[in-house]
Length: 57
Ligand SMILES: [Zn+2]
Image (cartoon, rainbow, N blue to C red; front, side, top):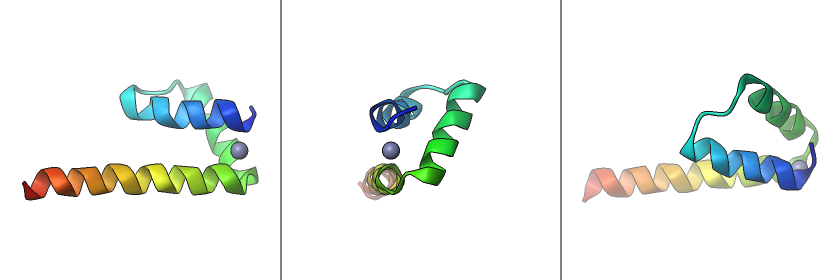
């Protein structure tokens, strides 16, 4: 898996469940790749922020 596939999987995972194999390969990629780990955190942060906005308004 390369970074392009990894980021694609990360954004897909917000829309629908990934397969067991997709989750596994994504996790392995995140272990070895700093850039995607940061991107994943960023996505997490955004979705949490969106959730808080929804809760507040
Ligand atoms: Zn990567």
